[in-house]
Amino acid sequence: MALLSAEEQERVVQAINLAENLTSGEIRIVVENSVGGGDVLDKAAYYFNELEMYNTVSRHGVLIYLAIADHQFAVIGDSGINNKVEADFWECTKNEMLSFFKRGDYAGGLVAGITQAGQKLEQHFPRQEDDINELPNVIHFGKH
Image (tube, rainbow, N blue to C red; front, side, top):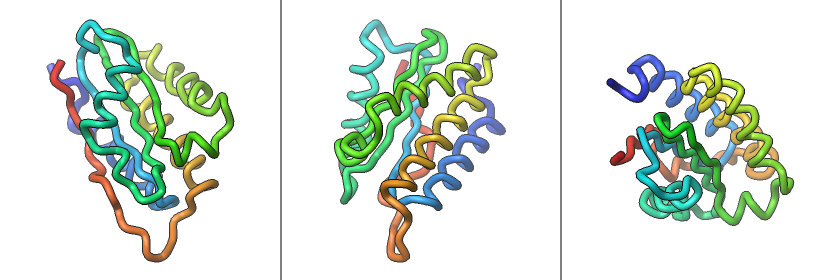
C-alpha cells in the first residue's frame, strides 16, 4: 500500500510549489510508515541533515516529517527561521495539521502545514527577483 496516492502526492508537491513562489524559504516533506522505534524529533532532525536542509543561504529551510502508521509527525526549521518566528509557531502549525490527520487526511494535513509554513516564511523571507530554488520540491519517502 502506498503511503500517499499519486493524486495526494501531486497535491502536496503543488502546495510546496505555491508556498515557495511566495518566499525564498525552502520546504521539504518526508513521509514514511514508521519512526522505527526512535523519537520523532530525532528522526526529523536526521532527515533534516540527510537531505541537507541546512544548505540554504539564509538557513530558512522547513522540514515536515510524517510517520503514518505510528501517528507521529514533527515540523522543524533551520536557525534562520527559528530566530524569527514566534515561540509557539511550530506548535500552532502542528495543531492545524493534526485536525486533518485525525480524520485520516494525511495529504490535507501536509498541505495545511506547508501553507502555514509558507505564509510565515513569506513574512520573514519574501521572494526576491533573483531567488533560485535551492532544494528540490519533491516528497522524500523514508526507509521505514
